[in-house]
Length: 269
Image (cartoon, rainbow, N blue to C red):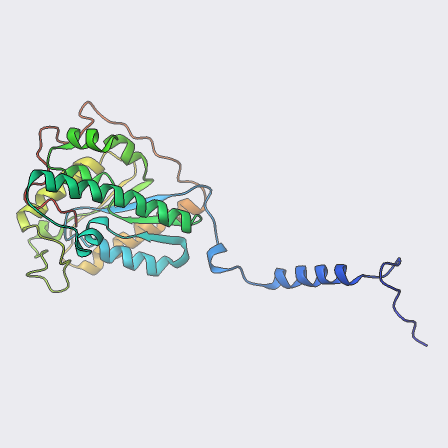
């Protein structure tokens, strides 16, 4: 006759608690990892998409977010969010400094919120905080004093930069009034877009991981190059090869000290 199993707790037997532990461990070992746990980074990484108005940053950001899924947390453009939300946009000097200050602080807050909610993802930022110094009506030194920071410190916050040149450089329309699907918050003319593009280039090109994606008559070609560069950066993050950057500034530590910023159209989108 078959012998009954040893009572729970006796030698050779397996108690209910031990059996549950064994079964749970066995089940977990066969379960696929949750989407958010497919990988992790050794520290938080921030990669910024920037460039002059009409460069395709927002489109590229949406494409990269969809392509890389749970590896990326997208940080939307602060200026567009602010103005589309009804923030007043007046031409007076004090009004312009007010909304540029709001854009800077909103940008930082958006990044910190996304980082807190997605601690194991790369932040993909549609513009970065150094953009604000170009649009500041009093110039970069005035911006540094008002924001209590430096251009160098703000550049240091980002691990890499993808600079998408404005389509205005190729004489293509970038304003929503003449381009279907364009950003309605964008107000720059073609010449103003090129000017802003060059000023932003001067600021961001100081970063040691600065990747320039030039204008291309084919937007698909431009997006393909952007995806390729960003994918390579993600792989470096996954391998822990993307160390914290070292920003080396020249004597002109503040960009365009005598500049009055991107006058007339210092919106940011």
